[in-house]
Amino acid sequence: IFLTQSPDTLSLSPGEGATLSCRASRSLSTTYVAWYQQKRGQAPRLLIYAASSRAPGIPDRFSGSGSGTDFKLTISRLEPEDFAVYYCQQYGDSRTFGQGTKVEI
Amino acid sequence: EMQLLESGGGLVQPGGSLRLSCAASGFSFKNHAMSWVRQAPGKGLEWVSGISDTGSGTYYADSVKGRFTISRDNSLSTVYLQINGLAAGDTAVYYCTKSRSPRGSVDAFDVWGQGTKVTVS
Image 1 (cartoon, each protein chain N blue to C red):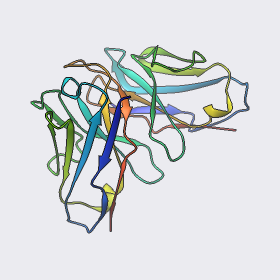
Image 2 (cartoon, rainbow over the protein chains, first blue to last red):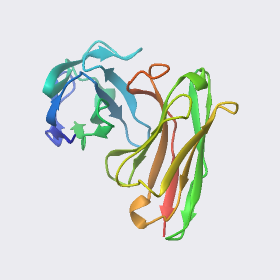
Image 3 (cartoon, rainbow over the protein chains, first blue to last red):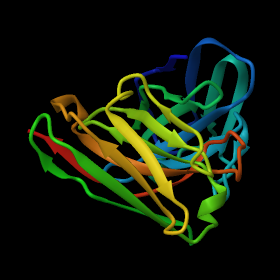
């Protein structure tokens, strides 16, 4: 299963909302989709698992949704610390990651 | 606090071998599947290998099958990645990761180490 994220780069200002997309090459029979945030020089951090469940300690401005082939990560109001690269992952059929979306100021 | 600490990376000539180690602490290691994920310089994340909680199941990306071997020692809370036949395309930071749910449950990676850098040149 291949994952394609869009857009590659999202240029926004603090306080704005962001919607990141992740499309699977074929329908996922489960909602085994996760989203990770990676800041420069750091390891990735789990934000969302099972398509819509927030990991412990993740602010509620982050939300996930979707099923089938289309999944989304929404950040309701961008904080300065949210500018980073975001990856989607499917873990229902082996494991694959999308190519990433950079959210920049 | 759950932690993963990788070691074993370095500069290796093409065709060489390395064994990466990942020492876990702060959780019941024997109850969780583990994986290795790599990231080439300036590129995205690539899952390369996973191992079940007991070690009886091992899984590999097609890109590394036959050259990488994952194993674990639950008595030492450590997972390993043996890499043979290294090529320039294997140059990356290798991250050790923990599966969020215990036992055989399929789940996302909730704990990541800081990574160990492998350079093939």
